[in-house]
Length: 178
Image 1: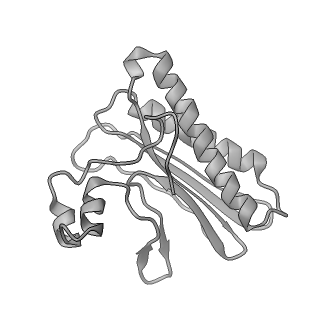
Image 2: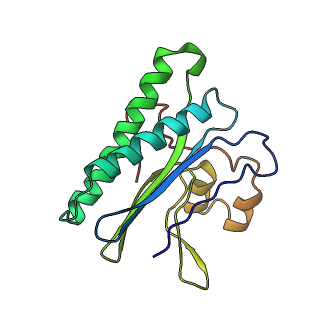
């Protein structure tokens, strides 16, 4: 397996508030975490850096080769919960960072299975050599509108409120991720 990551600021923003880490663990296990600070919010870059560091440290320091599926899932959920609290605490302690947040997607690939935890609209995909398949569903207002049949997926791509995220890491004391 090859593990790679890349980030791009896009065409609209000058600053890139993304942060990511990828790596390999014993037993041929791969992992990745990608965070995208909320554009326009104070401290988005700090939120993404803090969260990515927290999640990656927990994965690297807590993963063990003999872990089963339940343990790997629990590791990812705990890593995101801990990162959420860390970012939230920093935002409460510094008035200029109030409300900062970040999207997050973290994955561990072990024994031909992919374990993913995420919040926000950063996505996980799988590439089979020919095509990309999206594995996560956005936590956004527009995705909710698609889910209830209010708009189509084509309409969602150009919707003026497509950037409104309904779940995010760091803004609230608790995280409702998937």
